[in-house]
Length: 381
Image (tube, rainbow, N blue to C red; front, side, top):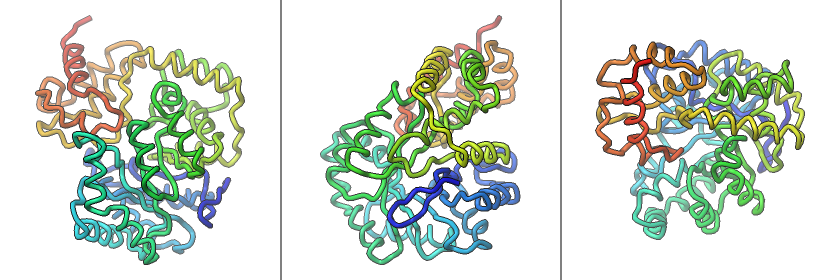
C-alpha cells in the first residue's frame, strides 16, 4: 500500500471511511459488527491504516472502539470530527470530546476535525457573525489546547461550502490538514478544483472525501460507463474515480466508505498498484461526467445529513430509487422500489419546510426535488 507522510506519520493513500459500514436491517445505528470487523481486519492486513469517523456518524465511534481493541494502537490512525453546531461553550466541547474518547476506547486521536464548519457558518445571517460565534466559543483555541495536551495529534477540518468561506477560515485559523469533497464530476461543475488549489497553494495537506460520490461513480449511467469500459474493459468503474483522486499532488489519503469486501479489495488493488491518470484519461473522465449529469440523476451522496426529516420522509432512499431508475433508463425500478415505502415516507409527505436543505452538504433543493419526484411517481407509462 502506498503511504504518504503527514506530520511525522506514514498514512495509507487509501483511507477507510466508517460512515457506510454494513448494517443489520434498515436501522442506521445497527452496524453489522462481524461483517464490518472483517473489513477492518482485511484493510489493516493490506496496509490501510487511516480510519475516518464522526461524532454524528451513528455507531461509527462505538464500532471503532470494539473493532480496534484487538490491534496495537500504533498500527492504525483514528480520525474523527466534532460538530461545531453542537458546541456553544467549552463544557459542550469537553463533554463531546471525552465521550468520543470513551466510545473509541483511546487516549488520543491522531487526526481531529472540525466537522463541516461551513454548515455552521451558513446558518448565520452573514459570514462575519458566524465567525463571531466561533471566536466567542473559542472553538479553535479548544482544539489547540487538546493538541498541546497530546490528546489530538493533528487538527483539521472537513468542508462543504463556498470559496469565500474557505478562504476566510484558513486565513484566520491554523490547521494541519483539510478534508474536501473531490471527484471527476465535481472538479469542473462545483468548486472542487478551486478548493484543491486554495489548499495546495498554502501547502495544506489534503484528505479527499467522496471520490466516488457516495458510490454513485461506481455505477454511472449506461452511456458513461460504456465510455470507460471501452477504454479499459478490465478496470472497474470505481477504479477510475479512485485513480483520478489519487493522482493529484498534495493528497495524503482518499477516503472510501466501503461496505463490502468486494469494494475493499478492488480499492486496495487500485491504490496499491496505482497508475496515475493521463491527460487523455482525464479528458475521457470529464466526458463520462458530462454524459452522467445529462441523465438527470440527483447528486445526492447518501450521507444522511438531511435526516431525520421532521415528517419522516426517507429523503436519501427516495433519491437513490429515483436516480437508479434514471440510470437504468426506464421507470419500472422506480415503481417497484417506491412501492416499498410507506406513504408517510414518500415524497408526497414533504411539506417543504426546508430544514433538510439547510443541512445538505451538496446544497440540494430537497423540497423542490421532492415535489418533482412526487409528480414523477404519479405519472403512468
